[in-house]
Image (cartoon, rainbow, N blue to C red; front, top):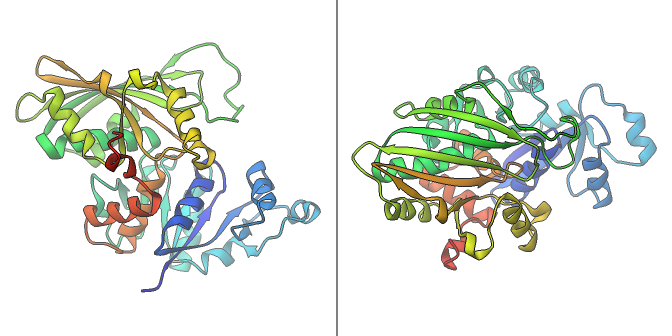
Amino acid sequence: MAKVKVGVAGYGTIGQRLADGVAKQGDMELVGIADMAPTLAIRALYEKGMPYDLYLVNGADTAKFDEMGIPYKGSFQDLVDQVDVMLDSSPAGIGLKNKRIYEAAGVKAIFQGGEKNEVADVFFHGYANFEKGLDQNYLKLTSCNTTGLIRTVDALDRAYGIDKVAITIIRRVADPGDYNRGLTNALQIEKAPTHQAVDLMTIMPHINATGILVHTPVTHGHIITVLATGKNGKITKQMAMDAFKDHPRIRILRMEDGFLGNASYFKYGRDLGHERGDMYEIGLWENSIVESGDDIMYAFVVPQEAVTIPETMDCIRAAMHMQETREEGTSETNKYLGIGKFKAMGLG
């Protein structure tokens, strides 16, 4: 069977990781990436020997690339014309404009969480609604927070049934290296409910969700707490642990092992030798799982730069009908990304 040909639009924080994710999939081919300026990410790509072909979007200043000696293969249209599906990680709002190019070329496209829902036919999560993405042309991923959140809620819901959840999100204010949010010593709260709660209900309409979000002046990961109410009775700590341990994209962390917070988890990714220190799995603290009456409460860290990459690979599989079911699709993605090996080693 021929490999699915994939392109990536936008080579920023997410685009770099999407390109790497596709390159690791044995049944996909990364045709190239597209951007418009010789950013630090593009400079690093050049210094690494241009492992991915570069195409320039409309409006790019070719003279700047020529001056630096950075080679490019052609235009954005040239890239689109060669692929089966585009992964669009352009700045928010640009994806909607790019969609017209994809439609004209008859190419499928998958958009990241920053785009408005109107850009896509399906709001997608690999574990919660894989089958809804089958053969669809335009799909949108959930945000990093919503992606991690749904992993946990879906795990509990499939095992025991969930009626409602209350969510608190302690959100990193910017990605590492971003200066657009300024230097700050403050916390900022958003109006409730958060979009993550609303998005969860869009993906899982049978669950009532509400939430609060607080921006914090840190860069390495969000921390989310969830208070969940079972639909069919009390969910004990052991029941919750069993469901979380069964999920390949959830790591169980313990404070006594040294996982004291978000920075510990980021450092662990670097110690593992992962490129950029990336972790595809969320880290859920065993110490945080507590029973509150008939409810269960827990907390986890979301490595925001990489957490959506596995679900994006799932999305390609659904859109291109590479697999039939969520079990088959997510299993293939996990295999190529090396997700779940730690489970077999008894490490969570």
